[in-house]
Image 1 (cartoon, one colour):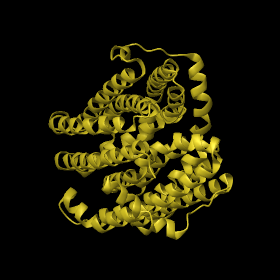
Image 2 (cartoon, helix red, strand yellow):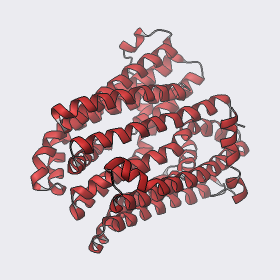
Image 3 (cartoon, one colour):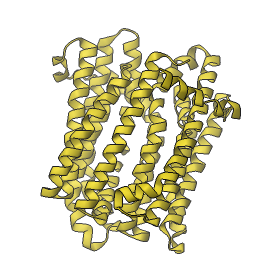
Image 4 (cartoon, helix red, strand yellow):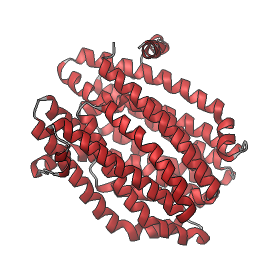
Length: 446
């Protein structure tokens, strides 16, 4: 049985993804109608390049929930606040410094994949995109604190409230300043998330809103955050490198229009993946506790989580595939076979990747990282290589299918090898997987 808190977290996580999916459709529609497919491709490549700023962040936002949650669970609110404030300060310093240092190298890198006629516009957009990336990641760190305080539903509520804000400002600003307006709309959304998350977290930890204005960073807490964060950073680098490497390779092989269609299809597939994966955000502290105290219960929790995610990922992936022609009509007003094909292959790849989420989190809870790293690095290096090797077919959909096959193989590698390390079954029995519909019945019943 799921606890009420876990059920509430799951429901709000799904609500967050549903609302963000609607927001994503509106954002893509606005960009395509006002600026065009090639502009979407430019924006996609520039934003993808900024992901490289995460090379030095030591996965701060990923590990903050564990430290804040442990301290808060012990009743030590002062320690929880120190972890939260230290993580926020560290994120700002790391991303601001990285952004300043990498602006010129990223400008050169964009020149390698961008057509000459679009290069000036892309380089003009880059500084704004870097600022947007810094602010967005500060927002993610602030949200991670809220999750660590066992308030995942609150985190989702804040995210849901921020999405209409982004859409409205995007609609207004793109008419006036073009692609730069897309970035400014995202910055405004992130600022709202930072303020709301900081205020709520401060209220929970200290009982006052005003404490959000005072930051109490600690070198001791920073060392603890980095000691764990660096262990999973190697895997995170691989995960972050996947998108820019695939986009840059796709642009070099097939041009900006293919990148634009890939951006649309990838966002749709990624949002569908999030519907499945977001409810698992509450599993990490749960796995960490039961792995240390009750291995039998840990095994049961992991098996149930794997059965649920395999069932729902399969069903949702099939729904996206069947809806792909309609999605194409809604977004670009026609059934475009290239876009439909990309939606199908990307959905298949990302849904198989989603099935590895419980195994990934279970391994982290047990302080096992080598197979998570191996699976992610395999996908990140093999996917662009497969795409490049298939360029001679002249079909971007087939090339992307090769890249997605590599992503799926990486996910299977993680599930298989983590199960060996954890001494659990890699895949639950079919009867448990097909019985996962009961989980949906429980949500509906509640």
